[in-house]
Length: 224
Image 1: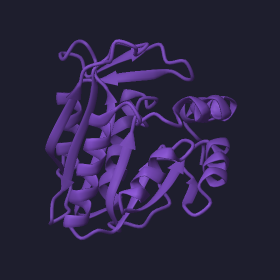
Image 2: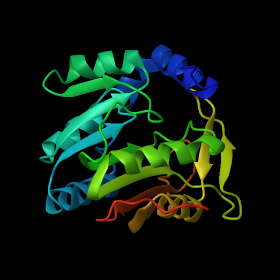
Image 3: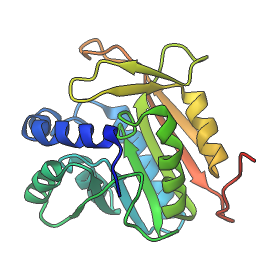
């Protein structure tokens, strides 16, 4: 299969930046109580809806996967960067980490209780995002939950907005547009958290977390 250029560029960039990235973000949650709270809420609703495995997609060096494990979830990580997965396996040898693409996950249909995508869609070109959202839906069990985190665009009339990410080309998203895309795929929004940037943040973007649930029927809607 021929890989998309965007995926190849992103993988190579994160392979090169992996050690620095791991060092920089190892304690990412320490000063972000709201992020810890939404992850805890995600863990609670996953357990309440039947537990099941949880995939941390775009897991990077594995620190968030490890946090999900601390919250009592059967979590494993997937990332396109082999260098990131190597670091994750070294740091957390008791957890599972796989190299893979969000656009074509090596995960069976309907087996996951939860999917976490925390700032992992930001490098996806807008025209390719529906494919990834469809994969989120495919791997979730009926009643399973998705938590997706991303940076919000400034103009809600535009679905996405390019920004100057330090590692690879990246996009911010309109929360309403992304929620509508999830809904079209069969993932109904349950809640959203909007976090204003901290004064020390390099980029003064709103951080969004959308929590969505796959219908019990599990059937995706159609645009047709």
